[in-house]
Image (cartoon, rainbow, N blue to C red; front, side, top):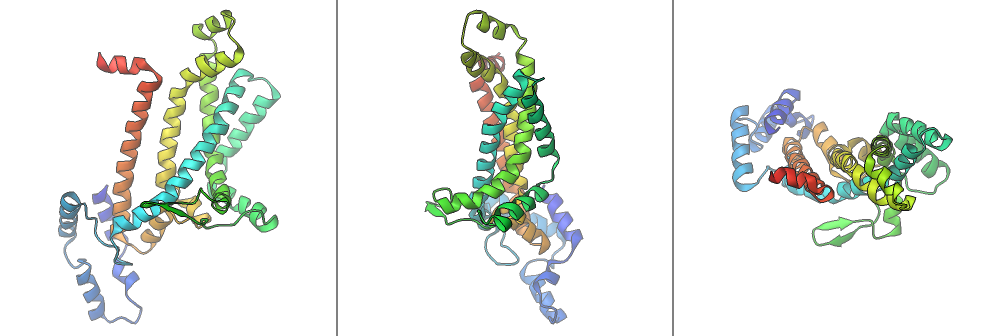
Length: 307
């Protein structure tokens, strides 16, 4: 990934043209190039980067600000994690019950309405949904802010905005924008899993024992459909974390997605490379967490692994 980014940004353009003023002389441009190490051959720049990254976990300094690239990203990460976590929590809390309902009564008007809404939610582009929400709730009704992040409280190295009403007001629109598409996907997955599980013997046996419908659905059904739901939720959570670029740009949310866009525009290579390396590590850890949850939900997975 790092080699790909190095090569791609090298081919796209020269960062010096972004950093130097239009009136700068060739000598001044060359001085900037030397100070950033851009006068070296690309392969040598890459080897220097690998040495620093692997030995010292140093991904270099931002061309634009001069600050360590990883520090810039870690400063923005809590905002993105807050947005992604709230959006996926909302999507799961709404999507799973609606998906089960659509699976239990597939021919009812309510179930058809849910599935039609899920198609719309899945099809509408995020930027359009975000702009419409801003138009209605911020411009016309003046209920919610059009962008930005609310006041934050510091907990060690982490800054969160969810502990104030203003913070939640700023979260509502971007969270709803992301959750619209994710909820639609979870509804469809949950409905399919529900329809697959309902005819199975353990559901029939539970009902034959006279168990209440709430227990049949809440224990026997839900526990067995959680694995595909956890899979989709985990993958989509990682996608929101890594690629919430559009939503963060629309709502001026100060997360790592917006930082990535700004860095790509200015060809700030250290920030882009550090972002992608962090994203790869995060997605790998997320997959590990999902696998661990599998063993908790279904002991048969652990038994097969032991065998």
